[in-house]
Image 1 (cartoon, rainbow, N blue to C red):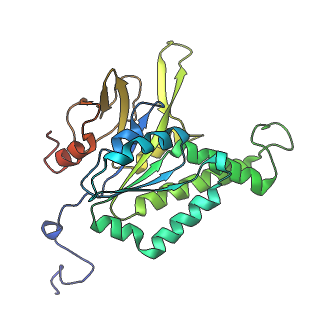
Image 2: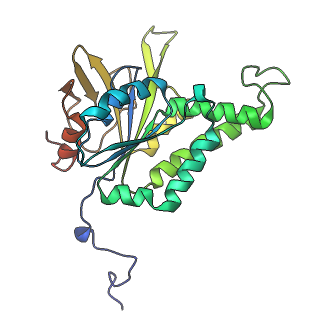
Image 3: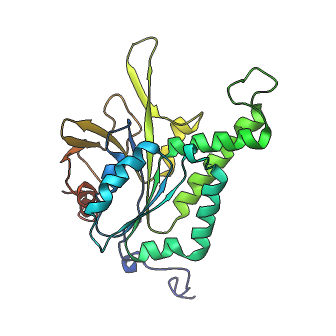
Length: 263
């Protein structure tokens, strides 16, 4: 019988070097610090696929303070510039074929999608363009049918799959949606994504953190806090961790990831 590790497709777990290859989702209200947190990573380069106008403004503030060894690059896809989802998708395919993602992994880089909520707006616009129908008229013959809603969901699901197939680390920023329970009156927070993705998108990611702005601090919540029950972690036992604004918070997160969840 052959040695089970002799095949080139198999490796002993002990021989696999640890690497920063997390896929994680950062969830928070506008201005909570999602983009800022991503920009505090200095152990490698960062590349943003920037779709959120608010995130773009934050990004401009971060650029002057970056060390030369870990620059920020950006591809911008904003609705105000008449950018569409096809442009974003084509750029991802181009970057995959050119080896850009492998290069970022070799440099311990981070790929950031900012934000998934804004990307869904691009996808909705794109389906509207393809179908000639309006999503705002669900009961009208000119509104989206089940086919168009399904097409939108398929585009989003495929994008999430592609993100998870990217070599190395990737972060997806997502906005929070708040609704009130009719019976209890409690505020319920969920991902600001349409349909089933509001409940299921986080399942695709290794880690899901809620970001909350508290005075001059950024609080990262790793587990359910009573309002948002989709936060999850395989790394941290603490419920949350506070960081001062201006700290290299993501550097600390990565360091703790390699240190058994200890800061």
